[in-house]
Length: 434
Image 1 (cartoon, rainbow, N blue to C red):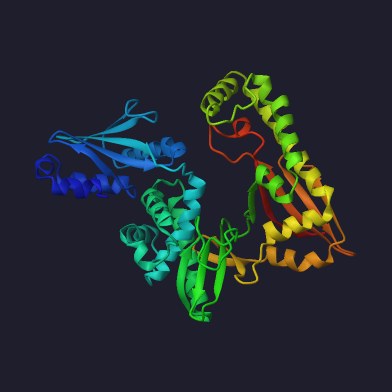
Image 2 (cartoon, rainbow, N blue to C red):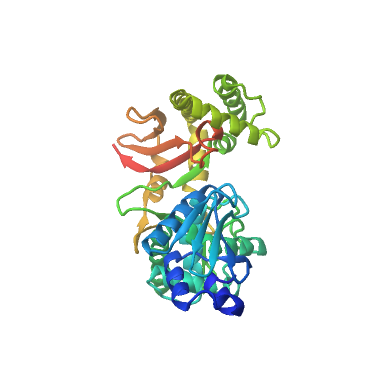
């Protein structure tokens, strides 16, 4: 992949029409985005920025804001795809910037997680200690990650390259690169205590000897052959990040209540989606696009009613999940052991949280695991202050450990809220002791 500047420097018939000063000014304004060149002549050049489909509009706005700040003339255009394009007006040359979606359904949430996971693996294995976010990205984007052994297979290697190329499109690029610097520091500190031979990015595949359901985001193999899984979180120093990320569909399958799930699907359809004339299989591959268009139209014409319907669907799902947790204590505790604590005897797990360029170890799952043998009862309750929060009260003889839970839509528009259907996101956000 060539940057716009590199391409023009190599194209003698073009460079004569754009001064070096103009190019440098343009590059500084657009940084840190990387372009591919679609086509060029002496008068015009088309370049492409790739970003997650639902984030292209924000990327375009950010680019145009940076051009404005740099006092580079441009014209926002509606042509050039659904997001539109940006035409930069040099004195003797026009550059049209197109905004195209990356493949694979990448979301910014996944992209941000990958920055904090993959970048530290590459930096550590290359034995780099770069503390400037932009310089760290410049290294990672030019490095041969496969050479450092961080990918478990070719599929993850391809995905990793796509993620790296797209990282600058994140609206939290600098913040997440700073988190990556923090995680890299943690890896060096871990290395001091126990020398690390190899790091692996646990994106889809896991290293040999690690269960496919292990919660680790990256894995450290030490010189003595032992393995450690590392689950990574990012946020403010005192914020609580989710320690379980799952969905209603998977929750019911994992806890073993498929019939309850089917009943919920039917109820949500009858009370929500059928009311806006969607077919029973509205979210099937054949009908999904048309259904989302219809939901978007309904939202535009009935914004208040739309939010009321989402709140109603949210409550149906929250109630069903809480009822499932309260049904059988043994099944619930088994679910928590397997899906929340998820400690492997062969490959232990540690949770590390990055905030800014610093890190700390998260101990909630350790405390939960130690409390499990003492539990006498389990009671799930709705929050009295939030429509999406709920709690699981784990009681021993003299202590109550409360798991803070939430359920909500987590998709990007237009596939969020009602368009997400019953399959809302469920998260465990930490514990408190009563």
